[in-house]
Length: 140
Image (cartoon, rainbow, N blue to C red; front, side, top):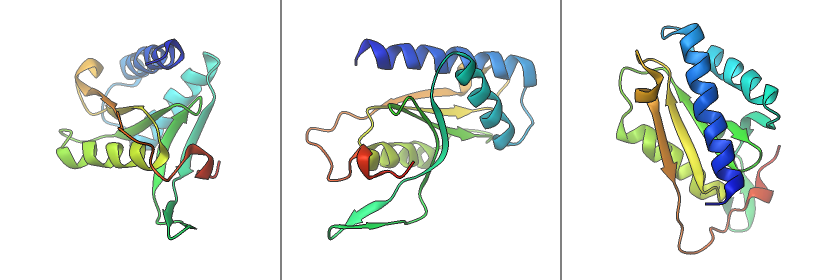
């Protein structure tokens, strides 16, 4: 992974820990999303939220209702959760979104944990060939 992506990843982890230490578990997912977005913007990061992720089918762009919780610097995805435990379906959701959008790095952040380090799941998408869906297809 490039140094740029790794710098973004460090900022995400650090910001998540800072927000979690301040707010603790027990709030809605949207609250944490707003706060980590604010924290990442303070660090100079471009943060997009609820980004539409269309599907390309037979050459047509179709909005199937997929939304990326957060996209940082157009390179790294974040999916926020407030669940008792992260499940395989949460990982599958993030990996699917990463494949559809052509992103290499994503984070599942589960805010409903006593220690944030236990709620951070880093996922890497190493596709052998590019997907027909490119970042350019995502409407920002």
